[in-house]
Length: 306
Image (cartoon, rainbow, N blue to C red; front, side):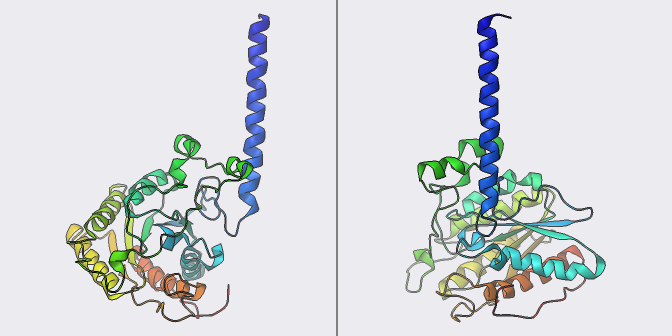
């Protein structure tokens, strides 16, 4: 072996050791913030690649309204849904898990990519919980903008911290679209200003069904008459597209939580843990019916954190 070859091997070994050291350090940073942070695979909460025997997995897909950056994990809709499913499955020792694949700042046209990206988690049911922002494109800090994530599925967080830059999945909530606000002009239905949004939602459901999974679309709590009109139009469009498809379900949660009440929302848009509890009950009940399970034993409503 020549000196040049030996030097090349040593350099490769050093690079490999440096990579391992970085990976270990990055993994530790992922674990430092279990309350608000994301795991190494780029979604919020605990990484759940492995599952218990017989476990039924549910994936939650959406944007800012499903990600809920301002709430700790235990107060989010994903956590409330898991709590209800776990409670329902407890008498029969049926295990459930919920993975929150939502991403802040993204819109409905990104849901297909998320559903395909995380197919390896193999959920039995995918729940789409959309919000109130209606735009297209990928936000500046979307996980898909990471070259490492696109190539390997691993989302590093250390480089942004070292450079003092915003991390992945740190895009702000886009708030409420103008077309859904009171006083806005034009048609907010799927035949009007929401046509691209409705088409994206139909594409997302079709992708779920093509993967052999069950799909549930949940309308978020109504924030205006125009929003209610849009969601009614979406429900009709989905019914036409998936008529008599037993693996699809639309859940109207528009009245599940009154966002004008401070106990349910601090600002009329974002939800508290109490508001999420009410929606989680509604979704869990319909999901269990779809799976053919017994009616869930719903928990008592509480104003405090669980």
